[in-house]
Image (cartoon, rainbow, N blue to C red; front, side, top):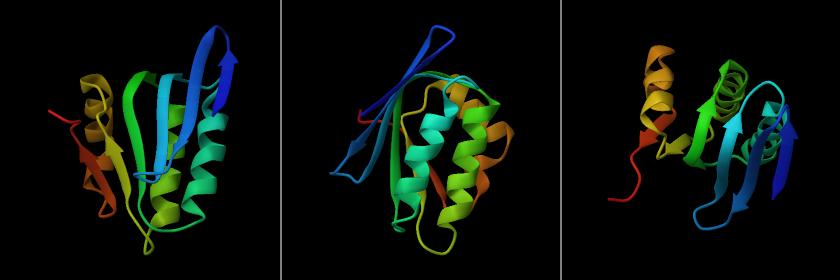
Length: 112
């Protein structure tokens, strides 16, 4: 697990095995988004689908969004970026920037 704290904002990124991917919690902003970016680079380098559990992400700024878009680009032709359980404001952000329209990005609701 990687913890980053900047400007009073905490971000936790931990690797999951089943399903393979990352669990992200806290707030993602310019002070800590590089930690998310490093974790995504490590996962996308392996190819295949990468699942991000975003259920516990309270805030995501444009810096964090940039890392997600980069991860989707890195996976083109080799896998999908699957975003699970984003909160409504974050889901709307994905829709505004058309992230949900990328052919290799899937946004899933969490378990019912």
